[in-house]
Image 1 (cartoon, one colour):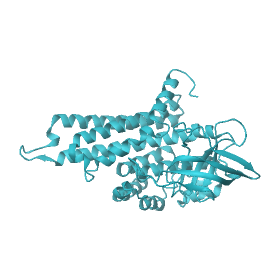
Image 2: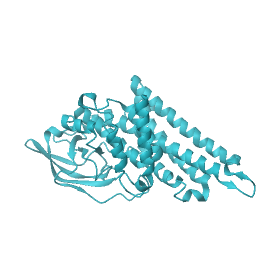
Image 3: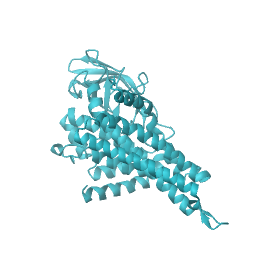
Amino acid sequence: MPHEFEEALESIAQVAAQHAQATDRGEFPQATIKALRDAGLLGLVSATSVGGKGRGLAEAATVVERLARECASTAMIVCMHYAGTAVIEQHGPVDVRKAIAAGTHLTTLAFSEPGSRSQFWASLNQATADGDNVRITGKKSFVTSAHHADSYVWSTKPVAGSELSTLWLVARNAPGIRIDGAFDGLGLRGNDSAPVTAEGVTVAQSMRLGPDGGGFGVMMGTVLPWFNVMNAAVSAGVMESAVERTVKHVASTKFEHAASTIADLPTVRAFIARMRIKTDQTKALNADTLAAIGAGRADATLRVLESKAAAGEAAAEVGDLAMRVCGGAAFRKDVGVERVFRDSRAALVMGPTTDVLYDFIGKAVCGLPLF
C-alpha cells in the first residue's frame, strides 16, 4: 500500500481519536469526515474516471479497520458510505458519482425495515409509477448518517412484478422524507442511526439503481460482500482497540503493597493471550476472504458469510474479556474499555445478524440453496 495512503489514514485516525469521546456522546464526527474528504478518502472507491481514487474493497476495509481502532461510530459511517458508493458506482448517475469522488457527497444504505427486520433483502416499501417518476412510501428502521447523508440507497418493492426489491437513489432533503428522532442506543452512539420515513417521495425513474426487481441481485452481488467484509474489519479494529487499552491498563496499574502490576498475574496474561488470538484469527479470516473474492475462488461466498459472523462473535468475546480483565476500572470512561465493549456488541445484531448468517453458512456447507 502506498506510503502516502498510510500517512493520510494515520493522520485521519488521530482526528477520529481526538473526537471519539464526543462522538460517543452522540455528536456526528464532522471533523473526521472533513479530514477524509480533504484527503480524498471519501472518494476512495470511486472510479478514477469521475475523479476518485479507484481503489477497491481491500483498501476500504483497511480504512474502516483503522478508524474503528479509535472510533467505531466513525468507522460504521464510512462503511455505509463505501457500501452505498459501490452500488452508485455501478448504477448511479454521473453527477452523483463525481460528487462522491470529490468528497462533497456522503451516502448510506437504507434497507432495514420494521416489517422485515434483519431480513433486509425483502422490502415492504411501495414505489408507484407516476410518469417519469415514482412515488415512494414506507419506513426504514435504522439508517446510518440519517441526518447527515446527502443520499440514501433505498429499497422498495418493485414497481411491477413479484421480485423482492428495487433500489433507488433518494435525496435526504427530498420533500416527504422525515427523519424520526436521534439515536440514543447502547453502542455506536455517534453514527446518527435513526428511523426514516418516506411519505409519497417523488423520485425520478432515472434514479433507479439497477433494473426494476433487481434489488436483490445488487444486494447479494455487491452490497453483501462489501458490507460484510467491512463490518468484519470494523470488528477487527474494535478488537485491536480492546487489546491495546487492556494491555495499557494492566501494565500501568500496580499492586503497590506487592510491588507488582496486574500484568504480573498469570491469569490476566492468559486472558490477554485469548484476546490476541481471537483478534489475529479474525484478521486472518478477513484477509482470506478478500483473497477469495479477489481470486474468484469457489469458496468466496462462504468466506463472505463467515467473515461477519466470526468477527462479530469474536469482538463480543474480546469486549467481554477486556471488561473482565480491567475489573472495576473498566466501568470508568477514562479507561476507554466500556466504550469498546458497547461498540463490540453491534455486529451481532446488525443485519444480516449473526444468527441469520449461521443459517446461511449451514445451508452453504450442506449444499442447500440460501434462499
